[in-house]
Image (cartoon, rainbow, N blue to C red; front, side, top):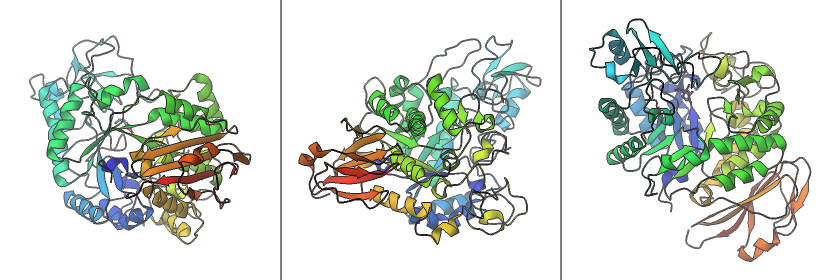
Length: 548
Ligand code: NOJ
């Protein structure tokens, strides 16, 4: 039995507005999601992460909030949200929400008040400068879409700071009242029953910005405070943070100098994400091996969250220029597939040319490497992208449920975003209903894969170590050891069939057997002549601890 539920979780990330529309207005809603919980339960996911659900003008897909204590009326109301929590819990599914407190929408009443007068009680909730800051054109997160990080507000007659778009003014976390408010927001949703938060933009929340002062001091203590507060309110609540920083800067997000995990529980593994993409592009596992070697040791209750795709571009900025070029060439050859000079705005299936073997390989790798897997909606059926849509919207198209008009997402003539239609990835071909009727479908594969993973709790809850042997090029062997036993994994990133000798592990094995793989291989025998097809993968249970 594991002490930490999140180490054995399978997290499914979705945006309610593009998932399922129950009332025909073209916008996905809470009732629609409730109607699809059985689908998610069958898929085997144990936790949902909902992209922002709060009232919003929708200029950054909900990451611009006007009321932290409510649900956007287009999605439903708080009653529907409570019902979602209840129905999900009945199916053993927890629900996490996005906590986006680095900034608000500029339409938020706090900002409206703040800008209206220097005497406003909210003036100090934001970050102002009386004169034009010298670093006005530095630190933009969205180059090409964002011109500056300090903008002049005519009403306020002052400059305000915004790490992201100009309609997202940063909150001032040097102000104790803002810190208290963030805790209050957290407590509110915990009281309703959420399991925790995906915390947006954490490095920017804790930076104590002052005009012209880079780098600014970082207030890591605030993370300790937040963690404490969350856990006083709900003991098993978790914080899952987005902190896309250099690996050597990560330990302080998990722990203070004492080294125990008293800050963030889980961090997205951006480093592994980039290296996974590189390994897939080069058909060579070297970069994954580097990632496993280079990452800092984690305190006991801390955990990585591992992902291939999310709702943003794939960020390749931590790769070298040469590595990035290789990934671009393989997966984003056209300018239109790229974004912000650093990323790719595509879904995985089209990136891999729709090659089912490589898709399985990629997801088998993601789910068996260290950490808790996070799966983005639609990936389980191999959805495509719509490069005609601007920016990141290319990968934010509605879920494809069926071959009926609108892809079963909505009856409305004009859904919030067009459903992908026609061609290899259109809803007519790629949809849940069709894959339900086909036992060999990608969806069926995901269901079996996730079920097998959940029978292998040493993945996630245990260690993840590269098995360093002389193996054919292209092959990665890694193992997961935990209190429940040991799993061994082989992945062939190359196209050629090979044979792998891991006979020296046989001494530790206890009736080893294969639990999952890309095809029916010969029984594993003494582990000294393991066949592995091009792009093949094998999950081998080496041993099971008695009594677990
Ligand atoms: C990170 C989110 O993932 C992204 O979608 C958003 O635009 C920014 N934070 C700003 O909130």
